[in-house]
Length: 492
Ligand SMILES: [Zn+2]
Image (tube, rainbow, N blue to C red; front, side):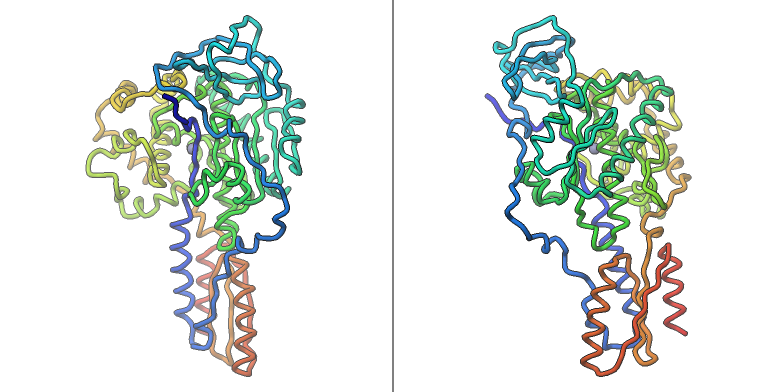
């Protein structure tokens, strides 16, 4: 029996949205409570969702992935590692090429093509060969991608090929992160005695201008989901989009969260191509997601950049802030050992990502030797070979011991000591000042869109009540400075 397997796809969710929305509502309510005027209380301050405006055109052709890129058709069965087996198979262009066998399962082979994509072929249609596997040249792949993605810009660097119709600014931001992260990560792994090799083919990153185009490309697979970008282990590509649900409400946070996602997916892609994680292998979830978070932190302050492997992940710390402040544990983590809860997870939510990062950071920083040995063991995980919960637990215990109470205590002690930069606190905040014949109110927002819509609403109100409302906007580097100014100004 055959079934469509969705393999190796890392679905990275936009994790900050829920928490952020709640924060904004609190801020807005706070703002209105200062108002001494009832006139403006009904002003709609939230802008309309900008996505609704994205209806122009319609004539542009919808770009869709080849169905073969949506998953591998593989039978059930015992997977046999490919080792160094190579076979002659037909490429998309009907040329005979040398592919490397990633895994054999049932009557099929999952083979790595010269461009790094994985393809399923019938074993009897593949001819064994001694010819070497040679990855595609960057220039050749770039030309192919340019044909496949009409209207997109393609740019090649020593390790990556970027294919995008997003803004140049977005391309610069994402490529800046990936280009600095790649050598940094490789150097870091070498100092940690993890073996690495050069990728055999370019790493492809595709950036769509809008979420709609990205969803369409994936045949609607992620429509309506919280997935914001992913590394696809089958096509070996990172696919993302520029337009963000957060962009209108908090453009700076949107960009930061987007950049952090880029770095996270970039780490998945790099690890799968430098010999650290075998293609189609499934690592225990906590290390599979914790390691990219550990390696990918990006800066929260001015300048969007990769901070360096092992540096504090401010966005993760922020999402754990309530737990850290109140010395509590995440809802849903039960009452047993925290460490055991983290390492047992098969599926994770935002809390799971954060605590996987926390555990990885703790072990990576405080238990360096066993951590390096644990990593060396997971680098040997082969394609498609499942590991039972018991096996995963035993592997953890082999390296870190079974005194979970002690590990828990050390983990939280480590976490509580970490300093971090609050990403919401340190955003540009605008204070909108309204003077209605001596009666003052102030509204605090992170959204430039709010300013415009409030100003328009004010003009309309002025016309109705027949007197001028004075309107001013001040800019502050943080929430605290904005709030202090607003409170003082209103009470003057
Ligand atoms: Zn991930």
